[in-house]
Length: 430
Image 1 (cartoon, rainbow, N blue to C red):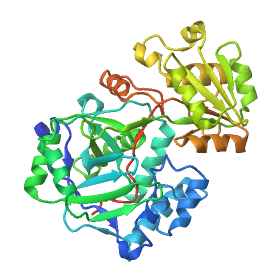
Image 2: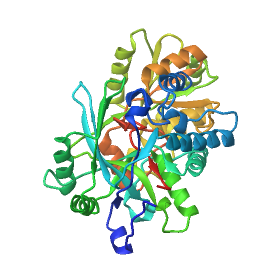
Image 3: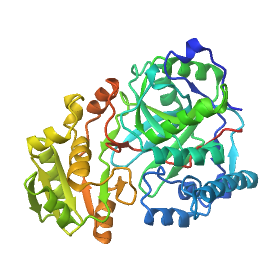
Image 4: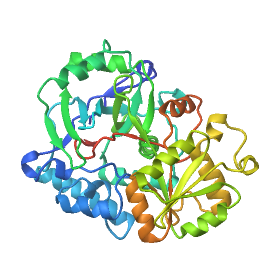
């Protein structure tokens, strides 16, 4: 087992990140490390992106995080069998020594992100150690929990951020020192990001990093459903057990600020003409016969003055903004902070989805959540539905609401870059 003993006193200090024996692909057993990676399970655009990943290499991690079979039980059994087979064949092998992992992502556009991957003690919300900022969908948590039970593994890390104490902090020093040494893994994925991985195994270095992180709290940047899954599975198993911990990537955003992007909505079965007819008189509507990039610029300008959205799917763009104040007063709960009540996601869910379009936010037959802007537009045009394009929320708004204990509507933000899935896994029985 890769759990570490800990006292109640140290567990309540803050972030408790523990070493584990990472399960990693053997480069000699796969076509390439890039070909076996995937975006996180909820970022994969289905079915096109799923099929592309499956075809890229027979051992692509998507076969574990998004197994394909007629029933839920069959999918999870398939993932479990696949994981065990790959381990038996040596495609995936556990590192000899437990460690924490320094992970770097770099892009030619100047983006550089470094953080530490480890097994984090799963804490209760009352402890204030890990702050969520979004609500979750129960059926997604149930789906992820069933997959983790079947595989007995954390297949991909979720992304957490914290605000470090500068370059003199032990965690920052360990990250920067290792980044100057040869990595244990290096690859470049087709999205243009290069990925490098190092391991921290020296007991003194580990102790310093752990003591540093124990002074901090973290914000969930990406992976709310997986964190909720960790909490559910921890509750199912008597402690101490490997389920007391979950796989995370911790990024110090004081040194490496993340980019915040929007998550868009695709409304199935609602043509753009019907969506626009329903908002007539409730929002200002302007048709934009411009390319996507210019439409997004117009959305950004409108969002500076208030709530705004782009509707598309009919070959052009429609900017809706300036919602009727009386409509907002009738549809948005008044018992939340102003910062929450004025979020675009709040107006979209409480006003447009619930009141105007009557679309349940958790019905996958009616609504899909897609990170990629162009893919959202293309799918809407192909399927005859309506794409609702969102403008991103600033990180400081997200963090401020989280510290107040206020959760945003589901899928309100997309922090990035997200860690690639498939570089390091955590098997709970290793």
